[in-house]
Amino acid sequence: MPRLNDPTMEEFPNIGTYGFSATKIDDLGSSEYTLCNIVVDASGSVMNFETELEKALKETIRACQLSPRADSLMVRVVKFNNGFEEIHGFKLLEKINLDDYNNCLKCGGGTLLYDSVINAMDATTKYAQGLFSSDFKCNAITVILTDGDDNMSKFGQDSVKESLTKAVASEALESLMSILVGVNVQNFSISSYLKTFKDTAGFTQYVELNNADAKTLAKLADFVSKSVSSQSQALGTGGPSQALTF
Image (cartoon, rainbow, N blue to C red; front, side, top):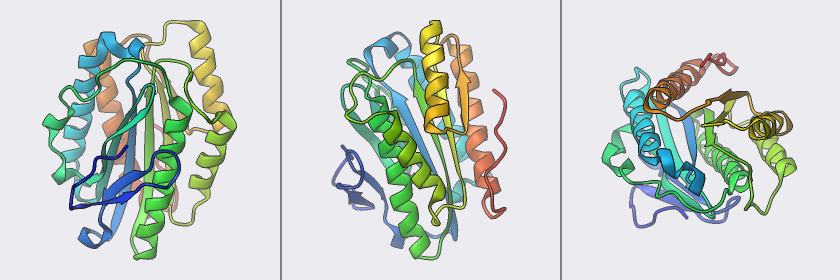
């Protein structure tokens, strides 16, 4: 569930699965925003590279904070295993403390993949509608990091597709980029499954990493931060940014 008791954040507890939180619209100063959702698998199979994944997450946010478009970016980070937890809601980059990502994953349990993707899409759509109603321009990018098959969700791939289609079609969003990242994928059946999920749900792009060592995850952090920056720069063009090559 979203973290409570932050006076700068508004809670949306009944939107989609598990709700979300976001910066109060009255506190925003820019005229346009790119909403970034980073959704991280924290199941038991990720435990062996948990520390490296947390470092990659931290480096992704650090790079975004140095972007020329930093003032027009809001980032939300969530993790999933047996359940779902919002590490923080849609926050301005200047409000994010990188140390909050230390020991944030605490990996273990199953893989609530589908429900977590639905939450990311529904949260993006709902918050974008609020921004649009207040005359903000808005686009979005969602990045899903996972190493395996869903085994916990109430909803299925068709529901993910429905939620993603709704987000893409929303008049409140100028465009939406959605990137599914398979991390440490060494099994052909998992690779095939994730590629099929990408096509079934309608993600913009699938990226596959065959290991999760420090070098590869550092490269992933660079790829994600550049993808976020590119989508932010596309705001106002009428369409999404071009997918980058990993």
